[in-house]
Image 1 (cartoon, rainbow, N blue to C red):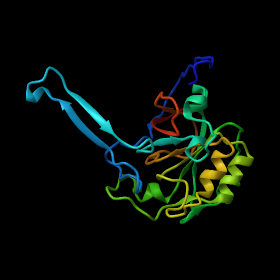
Image 2 (image 1 turned 120 degrees about the horizontal axis):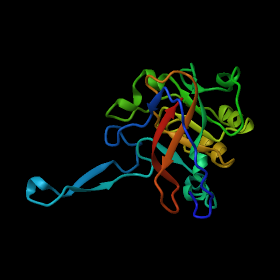
Image 3 (image 1 turned 60 degrees about the horizontal axis):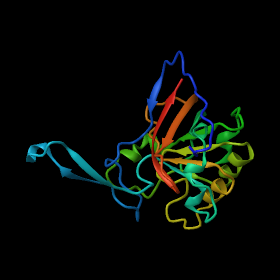
Length: 223
């Protein structure tokens, strides 16, 4: 995404599956303390205007979104410092059976390739957590030990089916710190309903803006 990065075209052929794993903005409760999504009409044809125009107010962490290191680290990278290739990458969807937090055991039998993304499908998906209109404080999160394992095996992006990789109320944010301090991007708020575990190509493009610690993303899995 940086101005000096070399664009390398990719081709996707013989695609048989496409899964939109993004949530609908405005239909997911905001994380407590974050700006709620607001859409305000500034021009309406039904009011006699020539066109329909709206203005949006939202958090950079609204809905399906990507966290960059600058989210927590004063000198951390912002999203515009990454090339587009970082957001278009091989990925695995992993079914994690734990009821409270994802443990390293969820990764024990996986063949993991360095540089790929790892997306966790948990009980959050089965509960329809991201489809509820009120924020749910109880959700399956990523344990520090699992985050450390992701770093050790060279994962580039960690995704989860809730709005935070950390337990609600844990202000230390151990999983965030572990991942972001090691240049592992975080993709939160992914909707994995109906997505089978397995290997895919992930496309999760953030908005093109300077200095972003995070950004909403349209995330898609194809294979």
